[in-house]
Length: 111
Length: 113
Image (cartoon, rainbow over all chains, first blue to last red; front, side):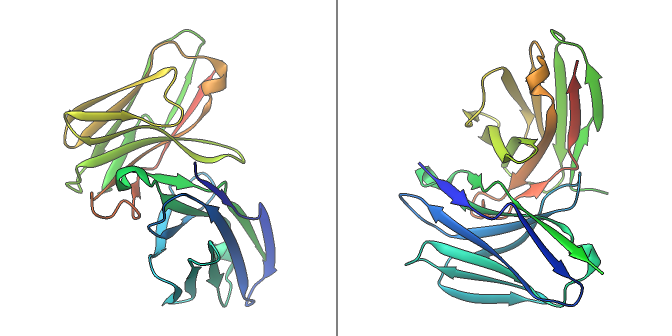
């Protein structure tokens, strides 16, 4: 089977840097995706890492270590609008058919 | 216009009623998905479809059925709604080579009394 673990909640202040971790267990691995979801809204895709290392997109970066079955999402220069839930997800091993999502990390950014 | 639309956006119904949630997309994707979201449980897959003729059960398909009427339309039905099906339901689409990047509709908030 597959399982993903991420913290349920993280708090930070505006302007700070925050890291949201995700560890996964899967018998086959393609890569790690990250999604953002504002309260009651649609999840939106942020990034996908298939290879080890750090990928940067503006204020957001995502890191993957395949040997450690671990990845993280790094948010810099936090803004109030970054308050949201963040989900990591991995493709299912069978036929690269669907995604399995973690339970999500709620990020609360305070002034 | 939104790429993935869902109707209705909100629905309150009673136990035992049949409910249909509809999803349409203009992205031209073959793959479509239905998810259910409950607080603290993340997104769980109900059904998915590779194309009009290929429909597959997800991890929580019991009590649900689907219909893929066209490439652009994928409907989810609750044949006899029960209170524990109260949840937020999302439809999503993806390119078959990029299932890591899924495009979600705005969601349907369903309450079963």
